Length: 203
Ligand SMILES: N[C@@H](CCC(=O)N[C@@H](CS)C(=O)NCC(=O)O)C(=O)O
Image 1 (cartoon, helix red, strand yellow):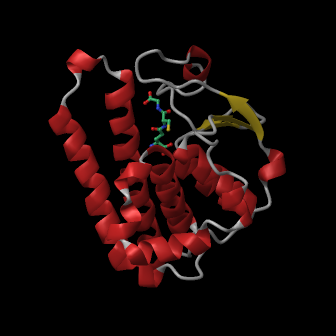
Image 2 (cartoon, helix red, strand yellow):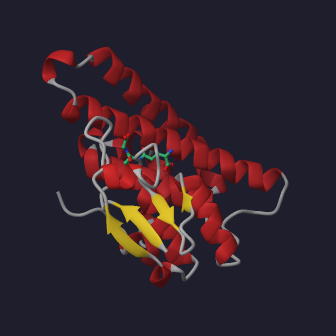
Image 3 (cartoon, protein in one colour):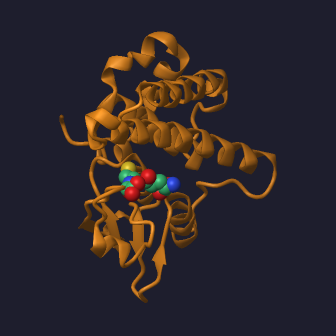
């Protein structure tokens, strides 16, 4: 299987951490991609019309996207338990994944606004709105941390990748001061082999 990827993408990292946890990492061939909302990577668009990573190309040519679908596919392939069986616990994990994906979306969109968009077209209120999503998301995560201990599933993996991305791109946010329970949980989760092996490159 080929995974269209960039080492900086938190959504790709979700898939790679899942693959590590499921002992499937060796089955993935990484294909570097250069996704961009304006200068679209046409080789990637040929597999995924949205031109986004992660995109997983199966051996029979089927393309799977986005990260949620890929993680669920890997979990099925590896007969894993990254998703609980149908019921309340599953909905909770899926909401945590949505919360984490939303934080990552807001952070990635802010990055595009501040680095990809020409300076004269930038809108500071829009950036402030996205960063408010990040903070409201972190506040909700802080309330949920008692439920996260000792869990490795698509909820905790996604949340770990969201926090890792904030450290990578937004170290100046200083989120640990405002969300100490989250910081304590992440200190342990970030030490997992799957997280260490997929850390973003040094800036
Ligand atoms: N919902 C998607 C989001 C993926 C995403 O936004 N990826 C970014 C890179 S981190 C991307 O490919 N952006 C290119 C674009 O927006 O056109 C997922 O979960 O995979």
